[in-house]
Length: 125
Image 1 (cartoon, rainbow, N blue to C red):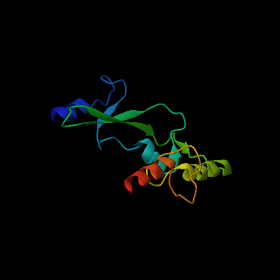
Image 2: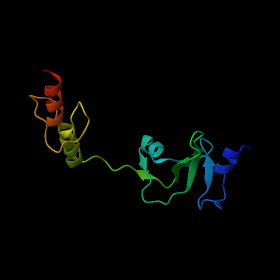
Image 3: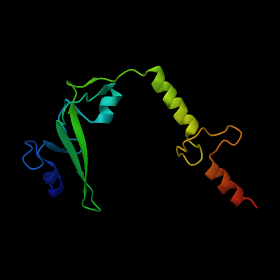
Image 4: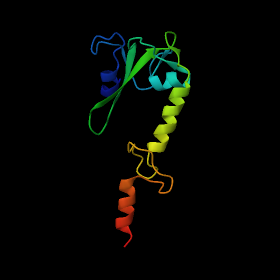
C-alpha cells in the first residue's frame, strides 16, 4: 500500500476519530451530501458516519468529504411557495454579467447591475 493510501485508510477510526477511507473506496451504504441529494435524501440530523480522504500530490494537503448512512437519511423537504418566491427574487437580484447578488432587483431596461453599467460606460469612449 502506498504512503498516501496508508495515510487515508483508517477503518477503525483510531487515528482521525471517525472511520476514514481513501477516495472512491468507501463501503456501500455510505454517501456524501451531494450523493444523498441526487437520491432525493438529506442527512436529517444524523452524525457523520465516516469520511473519505484524498491526498493532494502538489501541496501534500488533504481533501476530506463526510459520509452519512443512506439507511438513516430522510427525504428532502418539499419546496413551498415561499421558497419558490425567494428563488425567483434571488434570480432577479443576481447580475447576469458579474454573477453577484447586488441586493436590489436589476432593472430590465439595463439588464445588469450598476457596477457593470459603470464599467461598460468607462470602457466605451
